[in-house]
Length: 362
Picture 1 (cartoon, rainbow, N blue to C red):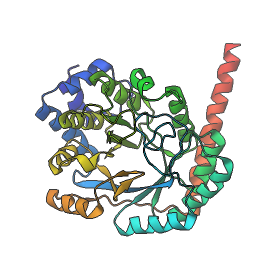
Picture 2 (picture 1 turned 45 degrees about the vertical axis):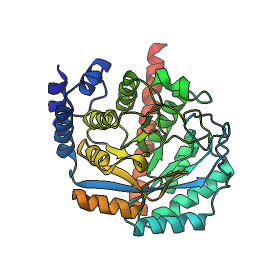
Picture 3 (picture 1 turned 135 degrees about the horizontal axis):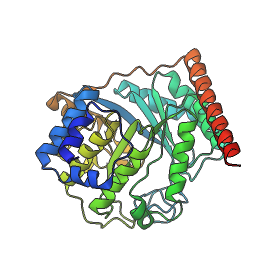
């Protein structure tokens, strides 16, 4: 099947998890206009083409991370002049969440520079989730690796999304991170999904990877079943003091191609135009929305790096005729109990199926 026929059927077909690298490379190789046209067809089949989901991201614990991610100013391995900060007080987080809601955000994302959370910190984080959720906002956390018990606790507190990016392809991953494996990341995503939370997972482009790595990253994301509900596509923000501060810039049109291919491959996911927007022109951002991006971060900072201010985004939305996506973000106690009961039933069925498989093999 050709790239054109593959993409043209994607708008009506069920989401696929079996994309081959040849198929993905063929999409990337399409004439630019054809690729964007295909992506628009898929996008309009599943979303309001002029609605953009708006999130706000807050660093709740900054710096001194033990991981060695070469792009990250929060890594304790590099001297980026970033001051270490302890876990924020719950009241400050809730105040920031209220301000984000008033600015038009429908989701509040909280990030902590941890390899994995400690139990004493998780108690505080759970209360943050409960109080932010009570404001009527969707909640998202990125806390590093979590085990089954931790994920279950976060879900019970009302956490809607868990962010854990794959960052790049399996083959290029070792060039970027050595303190955590690719399988560690996939295991965390599976744990989060098993606990009943939605998945937010994407990657970073412009880290010196090749075109094949961008295809392989999207292939890995599309293999997840179901697809991540949120797929952030980041352009590298080159921070002085990190090993990637002098890497060659990625052509913005190659970045737009990746947005379009992500939209075609994961038709029902929100594709987020994420980090790097501060360095993008309005024209580049407009092309990203045309290519199928339908989620952004509002606010003047993404954890520790700059981001276009909300006023600038509102002005851009006005120019393009875009509007924030309206979302039903409230979940009452009955709905939460039903969701957790359904997840417990699915887990029990999975455990039974695994036990029967073991018995059959004996």
